[in-house]
Image (cartoon, rainbow, N blue to C red):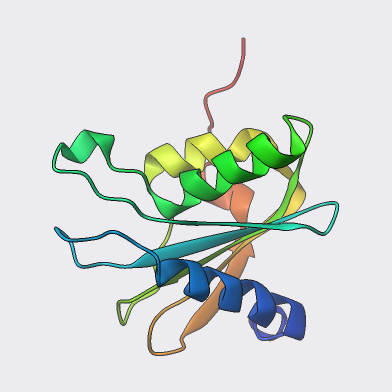
Length: 137
């Protein structure tokens, strides 16, 4: 999957995530995170982290991008890939809440593509991040 990470389409998605990170509001952690979701229809939706003094009210970039996707395309939209860029030297991965929030919208074979500030990139199947998701019963 390493070659797929550096493909032009993934680089464009990572570029959009990096652009979104420039808008992050991160006065507490100083960690700027941007996310870009590519849907199965080929559209891209972005988000950045928005920190709040009440830490539980903080919004992660991934959930902001998800809200953007659903509010724009509706609940039938499906995720083909999620790209995350962060201002750290190590790649960022979605937190547990974001993994659970995103998985219902992930189409079969959805990928996670990450890139850190130093350019280290990786792609992996999104489903592998949450092997036992909470599901409607």
